Length: 543
Image 1 (tube, rainbow, N blue to C red):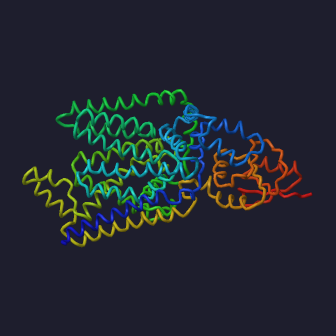
Image 2 (image 1 turned 120 degrees about the vertical axis):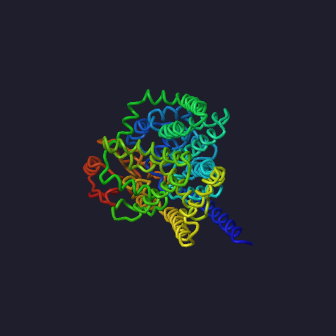
Image 3 (image 1 turned 90 degrees about the horizontal axis):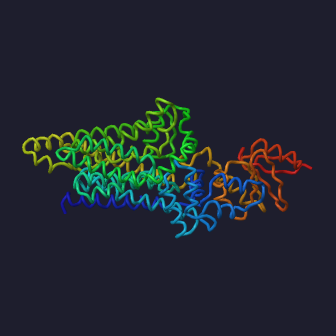
């Protein structure tokens, strides 16, 4: 067996192992991660209730069990149907509805649990692997680069984390990749069936996430700049399919426009500037797609700078060694969304560009560029050899020059890039392994979830507990997903003070307002003692 065959078998086995690891990590410990605030809002909308209805019906001070609360307001039930889910989503028009419809049907088929709803995201996330393979084949005409891209997405800690979230971001990732691949296929074949598929992908993307509009804009710029002899026909086909895709999205656009004031209110938080230097957040978020050990935004962390250098060099390498139609596609994918979220922050202030999930198109573009970099530097892939040879002597000269530039003629340079690839693989796998063991990671919002595991442990181990709170619904629902089903709750809206029901040996207050704390102490001649930091208090009788 010659070296080439051995190398092929080694590469095939390694990629197979990485794909299996990616599948494993997406489904591993689904139930051990905190079901945090945003996920509870997903479940509330799926159930068909709004936050206003929840507060009106439950926050009246009357006792309700955890089982009753979750059964009615976190899962599909007979009291609400799909139309109610649509109405609940209308109150949050910033969220496109496709994922929520899918999740409701999924739960109705497979049952209600944290594992079940997160399994939907995990299954969807797996579809990103064949989609990125297809996209890389269309871009580079190389199965090797396509498999490297699939492996990078498979063990990316970022994609694994969001592949375990009961939210729409794994679906958005898949629709971005599918739409991009469908566009390149339609451009290459230029037949009506291919453009129909692309038009449908546009609609799917918009129904998955409104920021798919930025991806569509990038596609338009790309087509405008790369269409050549068939410019008019290709541009016309693109415009027609895009318009059809957008028209399919019009029903939801009508709802968005009718509820635009709610849209602005619900997204107002992104206009508030975040403390800290924005570029540090960009570097942190970029590093998380390759390596994620819960690192912070310290300006002295080398990880941010190494990730930025890798991304910049990968994009330069892509520009230097691929045709305009290839590198421009990646640049427009990254550039349009990047500009759309960074420019408003720099001009008007805000935190859009520091929110990791908003930049998913940018990260996908960077990861694809890195896939080409690794496949060419480590594996000697020259994706455009056949095209260059067709150009005669000039093409042959460029191939020789590219091989020298790629470092294929020097064993030392080849080995150095192999080390880089090994570091990326180990970093991704270790990141997934570490994060899989910890219930609260950065994407769960420490401010909202950090002490949930400790609080739940304390409450669950006590006899006949009662939990009182005037905290916002999302935080209470998050806590309830780990509390025992028979734990009783009494929920109120500030400044109301509940009548504490009889028969409870241990009474706790969860994140009470000062009004609730003082009111309970005065009304029941008792004293509140901290049970866990300032998040959980226990009622102690004084007389």
